[in-house]
Length: 94
Image (cartoon, rainbow, N blue to C red):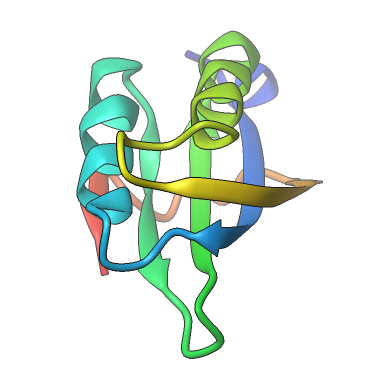
């Protein structure tokens, strides 16, 4: 994948998204899509995700995040498209 085809999305996910396996499920989904980036809980109860990869793969992760894992209840997903930074390899939980 060339730098020009790499896309980066920064997501803030609100709802019942902590304590339901959201971070680990997101990492598994992102890995299956071949994405780079990370996911972490925020002190205000939201989950933050940064994902880089093909536009199609990033879009699929965004759609997955709108539902989340089994016990999650997603109220809102804010998406900001950013310039790729190529700062990570693989997808990690922070």
